[in-house]
Structure formats: structure tokens, C-alpha cells
Length: 145
Ligand code: RB5
Image 1: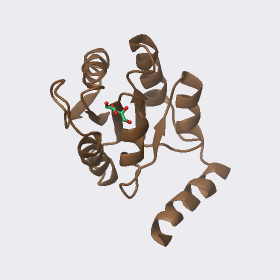
Image 2 (image 1 turned 90 degrees about the horizontal axis):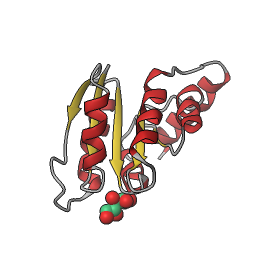
Image 3 (image 1 turned 120 degrees about the horizontal axis):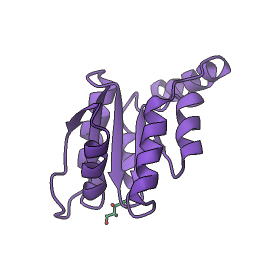
Image 4 (image 1 turned 90 degrees about the vertical axis):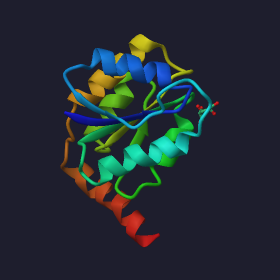
């Protein structure tokens, strides 16, 4: 799968670990590329735009808590970023919310859990059905605002 991946300085180390362990996927790494202090919205925007334009199929964004970078990614029209702290949330965010961006908090969860969350999220599909209507209503909010 083609995946945009982004982090700030707090998420940089985990970003590199995910790329190494999920080698079957093709990553478009928009940065950051070191642990120098930087601003997560800059990277969230780049990854979100790649997802929204269809250039990649999914995105993974990482900051310290996952909060800031998920808020920022969700400002890109067409992005549904889900901040997940466990595998159940990862599974549900795909099956029920059709999330197209996974957000992780590198200072909140350990590397092994982060990897399991990412693997679960990447292999899980959207259930559709009644969830289609709900996700369509999320999209309608974007056009109404
Ligand atoms: C950076 O110090 C930190 O604020 C950032 O990584 C993130 O946690 C923000 O939500």
C-alpha cells in the first residue's frame, strides 16, 4: 500500500521504526527527518494532502501525544484522522469510521503497541452498510462549513 507518513520531532523515532517494520508498504515520508524541534501542523498538512488527493491510499501521522497532529490532519478536507491508543480503536476506526489517516502518540504508547496498532489498522477494511451514511454525514459537515 502507498502510505504517507509524517511526524514532528517527538514522533520521529517511532516514524523510523514503523517504516523499518512495515517494509511491505511503500512509504512517502514527508518529514520531519531528525529530532530538531519543529511544528507538527507543517507535516500533518503535507501528509493529509497526499491522502486527500488520492496520491496515497492512507496516512500515518505521529507526534508526542498524537493529539496535535491529528487535529491538524483533520483540517485537510477529505481527511478522517483517528488517534488510536489500542488495537480495538484501530480496528473500529477502519471498520466504522473509514479513517484514512492513523494518528499515534509516541510519548503515550510503546513501540511494540504502536506497531501492532499500525498493523491492525492497515489490514482492516471499512464495513460500509449503515456506517456509509454516517461517514457521508461527516463529509457533509465539511461542505457545510
Ligand atoms: C511537542 O513538544 C508536542 O507538543 C507535540 O509532539 C504534540 O504532542 C502535540 O500535540
